Length: 135
Image (cartoon, rainbow, N blue to C red; front, side):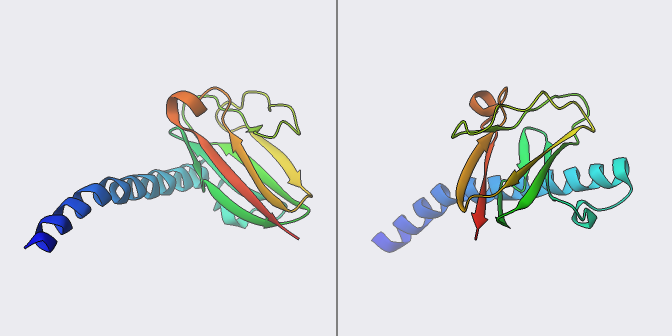
């Protein structure tokens, strides 16, 4: 009897995370569609960088793994909002504000995890991500 009571309670606690993951997946799919509309090709076709889209206060993908020496390109595909990229360790200055259709590239040379955020939106919108650099 207790197991039946605990299981629904556990599912109720777990379901907001599942819903958030589904919302993020939907937002990121919209971001990719917007990228294709703006640039005429999927973001995966970019040859000189790994692309992270900035859309509706999300980084898509929020977590990315790259090899050392890889450039990561953050592209703002929002319609009106500007964003920036700021490495949490302070190793580089915050990027300029990126308005729709603008981008910034950063090349990662040192292996390890590198947290980053959107300067204007990390506190109010939880807009942050991570790049993991492999040797």
